[in-house]
Image: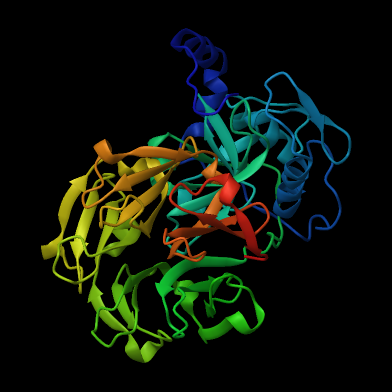
Length: 445
């Protein structure tokens, strides 16, 4: 079934009538989740049988096979799984294949094989996010401890291939996706491919070489590393400067807030929602100062430089519940400095401050549309719709985007981003960050 395309009301009504008893029987949130199977029931390494018990790891491996093969979306086409069984190559066919069902189910019939969960926080790898009128996708994990962004595998729509992607929690809720768990899941330890680095953040020049450095958290350990530009390679360019950073949901490089000439960062604690300032160059615990709370209600916190002319860096952030865009003034970004400057910003999965792209002396931002993957540029200081310009497509395949200033000497800000499917790091040249300017500069990100 085509993603994000609603069926005609008449057809939906007919389907609802035909399947209502089944769908209603499993869609009630209070329905008990089946007791999980354990590894003692069946060896985790043994491949599943059609319609039998299956581990979460195997579900993910089965879909990864289609992704590696580049299987294109089609509502009429079929493609074999690892054992040679054919499944329909649309969104529900992909989930049917992941669960090793005896048939290619639809978004309407997948609930017959599964149980609706109480909420999004109950999701585990291999569960499904299903909007029965439109689209279904396989959940693989959360990118952060506060569960603001989900990673998924899907067949999205015509013209695309089986892929990995990420969607914000707000987007998942706004589109009506509900969480479901396959009734025959075998609960064993899940092996998910290494996620590499997260919270990749440009912080300015920490090493005195005149080139912007970045920091990033190693997902598997929570360790914080500093990378030196212009290529941010491993080896001597990578230096461990902290640990325990997996408790942080957002890190933002804001420039010098303390007047010591060294760039600072702000960070949101995932468990409490408190906002902290850390002083560079190593951002250790001794420099940690609490400057706010309630920041777990905000997403896409983004540094944009000085917008108000007071010489202090400002930030923007999206209120997750409403999608409203707010500007906060430094150095403490307290509620008294909060100014609403836009609405409808919950349609964007990623917002990045990139510096001045238009030559007007005011910092610009770029944003990735959650649904289409299109890349847009907005001009400051208010980033209103009148300044919106589409500059790219298919950017939903990229994560951990960071504006790093001019790396190639053309006096125009550049961008780095990680290709989610390969974990390769790429540099893009401004002002439009086109594919023609793309240069691979790293791996295992």
